[in-house]
Image (cartoon, rainbow, N blue to C red; front, top):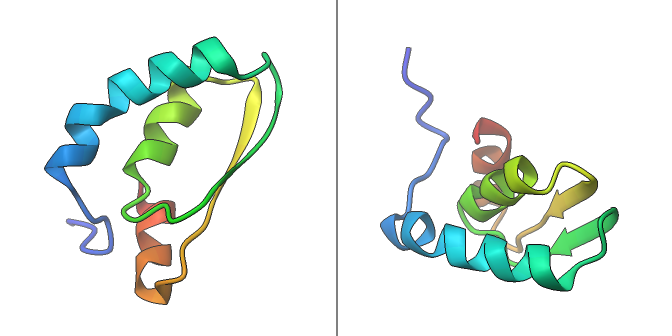
Length: 72
């Protein structure tokens, strides 16, 4: 069964690795990260996998976007 709540943005796939690399360089090894305007949730999923010592909190003003976070 395909989860239709999981949104996909090709740009988020392309820019996920460079964003992750910069966050790994800039952020401390552990802590809480609040992501504002998380959109599809793809960046959160990518960063959670690449920065296991951090707790990631995605957020978005657009309520229909919220189920996509959980789907990722």
